[in-house]
Image (cartoon, rainbow, N blue to C red; front, top):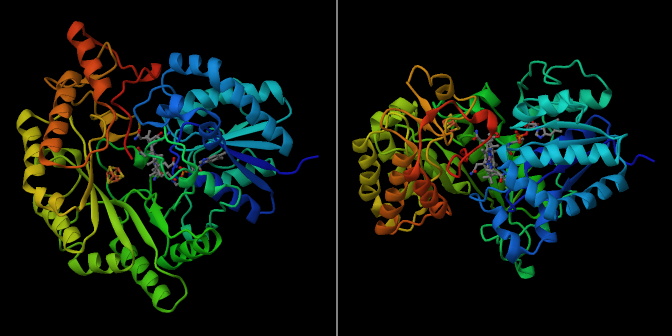
Length: 505
Ligand code: B12
Ligand code: SF4
């Protein structure tokens, strides 16, 4: 007997701090159209099943097990296959018509391939559909080989309903051009009822620790907008969400209210490219939340998200004041470089004055910050790089006030398919070395690694908090380079990715 039309599964490796949004959102969507759905989080199951002292490292961003085919094969044969068999058993117990898999990022590729093969071998009658941000790069070949019965690229809400109706000719399905939803206020509120939120560790940043007294996530992801108002050269968001759209403040506040009353969630992390993509929406959301609080409709909530530096004329002091009053306590600012000219090349579209205003105004309202830095844009010279070091000195007073929660060093710049930079490689004279890293004149991988290490040193010297686990990998890589390197063709197709190029969130 079938007890669900579809089971949405989350495969490892993802972070452990809270479930990803897509399965909960798609469940709510298909149920609103009369289908039944369940969600299973195998990422969380795996973490609970394994000895965290021995395997906790897998959940560090720098761990390559899920990214490198060879390493993944070894892990699959030695540990993962056993767990995956149990996951198949759980799906079998529900006996759905369809299984929906989210391919979230590069790290989802090998596990998705293996799991689809396993599912098809063990439950031949089951139908599989894939989707997610990395679907475009994995699903078409899975479909051609018959491991999945349908795949979706782009937004999943409408295509998944068509898949369940048996209509595979709709936009976004099996290679048909995707369509974007115009009015995001028509979307349902994600349904997290299948997720055992009390089993997500609060110690997610130290996945080796499995402390029963510190289980239970204290926040939930929320989406206020899709797409981005910027088109930064190195970023692929525009290929995923070509058009920028946002929900009304009222619709977002209602979602917060519902998650608050159902799960007690008081903290929300926006998945948006930018929470100030639309300043008008940010004001709308902030004033609605204040209105809800003052009328007793909902208690105080806290929220955080990614942020772009804007000149004062675009976003004045009063908006910062309002967002702080409404519960915004933390913003991650894509600073990228201390050099205005590099930022111009990146098309970040903010000058030094706008950056200074943004930093100072956040500091004035005690809004904590993470500064995201990106070392090694192709046009970055040694002089430009020193301006990034200088920036850390100039604004150390903000750090000394305890308002810089972290300087996110990120990986050195990676040329991501789907980004404008990827398409401009030839024009910029970019070549590739035999380790699969790009080279632009003197800007080589070793140069970028050395700059990254110097940046880290500078942060430590000035007392900035940093979160990174890449240093050992980078030293090893540098040593390899010192032995041998020559120019060759791009290595993207081989997915022979290096420890540094982990994309960017
Ligand atoms: C929140 C987030 C995170 C969180 C994840 C939280 C968690 N618990 O794991 C954190 C910060 C931890 C994170 C980490 C990373 N992330 Co991230 N992340 C995001 C972000 C900002 C939001 C994702 C989200 O929830 N979106 C909202 C939901 C609704 O959208 P969605 O997931 O795309 O789902 C829609 C469709 O894709 C589709 N869909 C999804 N699943 C399915 C399934 C089926 C069956 C169907 C039919 C459709 C479908 O329908 C959904 C609704 O329309 C996105 C950028 C963005 N704005 O999307 C980047 C993004 C997904 N991340 C990205 C990357 C690269 C990473 C990292 C690899 C970066 C790193 N530091 O190493 C890591 C690796 C993650 C991992 N595997 O561990 C990239 C992926 C790029 C790509 N093309 O593959 C993105 C797109 C950002 C970017 N442009 O660089 N990330
Ligand atoms: S880097 Fe950030 S601001 Fe720039 S396009 Fe990507 S998401 Fe938007």
